[in-house]
Image (cartoon, rainbow, N blue to C red; front, side, top):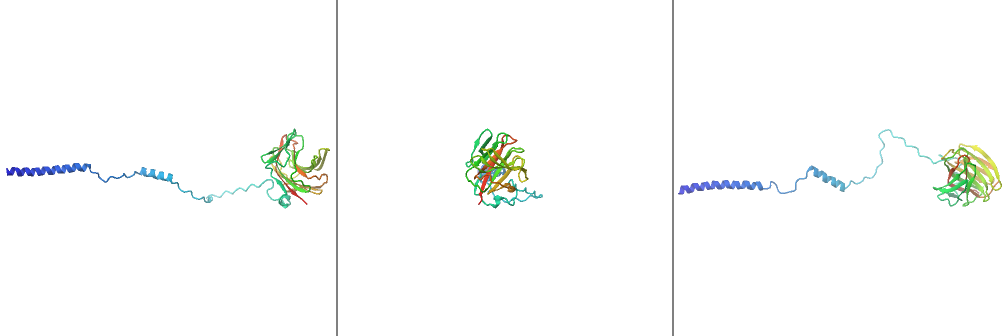
Length: 284
């Protein structure tokens, strides 16, 4: 009986040992390999997060720097466009010699001029200029005066800009004008000539003082800008174009104090010229 009990005891110890090892093996299958933690982000996930941050926090804009010159041979810079009509100062130009004008109108409005319209002429304010239109190609002189700054002895300068024109379509300065339709008319043509008349429309006076004369100082053709001037002191009358003296004469026909501008379509129906600026200097 003792021997049998000892063998059984040994066998039971072996069985228990095997069973214990088996239980440990089963438990090991359920144990975590490493502590529970968030999985390591993949490469794509990191790239996405960087992209979001870059979007949320844009790179600061750097201050501008001077553009470096190109590696190739530098392209020469174009010369600046000089104002028409005179690219350089003209010796003897009264506008330079006389200083600031006594009176000037840039014609942003036409408050200083008489505007009207009839069968032959239309004078109106348009786009910061006074548009003078000769409706019929019949030589009719349409004119307007300003009474804002009357003067007998003066230098008056007016900037004109032609539209479509041809040949002897005429425009220019009216000076020493009265309110009774008499004045001097200094005109230039589309083809670059000038003349001077003493006209009294009430008494049919039409005296030619200077016949049509060509001069290179006048810019000819359509869409040209000419700066015309008249210096009247006593009986001496001087005519200018773009600062250049064209002619000097002596005449005492008129001595009224008003001045303005005129248009006469001789070849082009609806010939238009724009008066862009008018300036006046009083002379002693």
